[in-house]
Image (cartoon, rainbow, N blue to C red):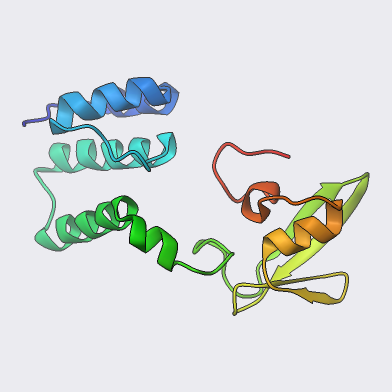
Length: 151
């Protein structure tokens, strides 16, 4: 399917909601977006596609890399095999600040996917969130590492 795009079209992606992005995806790519794609990821992929169309196409290497990203998002086994509690965007030694209970808390991530807080080591961000709040919580969500989440 051929995509004819202008710079204002790319700018409109910023304001589009998830339903609109899914419709645009269907129209431009001829298939529904993967169910695991967030609005942010659809926006990025659509903008990339629009920009490459404006530039005359993408390289074979870039196309192969995008396909690998999409396959990883679709393949449920890859989601389960990630294993580490800390998302890939958070590296060893990342400092996370969280305002909770009127106090600013500092958490440092570790290379093994765990974290340290108040001088104690924890196996995951979820364990830190549980220790901090006294209830079970999704750590990446609690610390704002997932799109559109605030706690």
